[in-house]
Image (cartoon, rainbow, N blue to C red):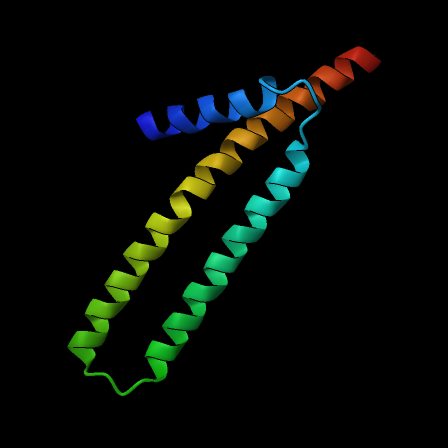
Length: 100
């Protein structure tokens, strides 16, 4: 929760603290691309492990470690995307009200 507040306040400083416009959609796309890359890398590691001749018990431990590491690496990006989606929704809502 505290980490999410940190991301939210950092994002607000980025968006509100600048006099120039900030490309929220571009940041969202880049963050999504980073998540896709992390997922691709994880899938590649898992497939490589599957094909290996590693002893089954050790393989199980490695899978658990890889999975935990993958979740830990993804978490900050997931939080950033959630914040960006909130800001994008808010911006779209404001634009619709201004147009209507």
